[in-house]
Image (cartoon, rainbow, N blue to C red; front, top):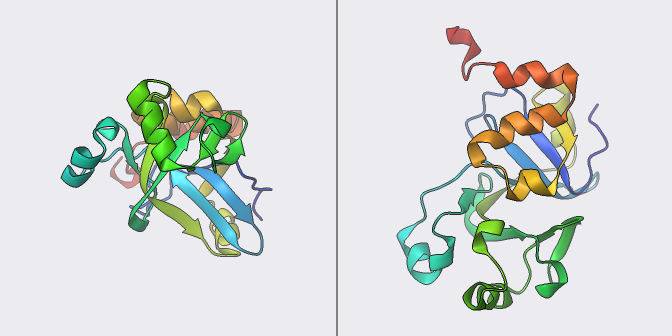
Length: 184
């Protein structure tokens, strides 16, 4: 059985999850329904910025992430700018998804918005109806609520350990697991 997953929650790969797409990943749930499944963005997989992206969007140079293994060419952005970016969708208090990209770019250009406060993600993570429940039954994932600080202020290499800490003492030992326990 899986927990009651909601928009704004975190899916945290357990230390035993060996899928290379999600090993030690933290996924921000951007949408979820039992009927349609779950859509989210990985928060802690920085990528080298593709040359064409550097040229067309120079403000994303240091803040591009692999959002997941699905549609790797599609870019999504998670930001704190809310209704200042028309058509943004609320994920949780202080965290918004997408919106009018031209307005966002103009905000970067005129200094109203800071690109470093955003997570630009190429690709996304998705699970069909019932798929995530099966993975929870296999203990592949931990579940916790997200925080604005974890999403925007935590360096990518610390996101997983801090997210595990949010799961409580019961799962705190996971953050000390080696990358490959079989080689211990």
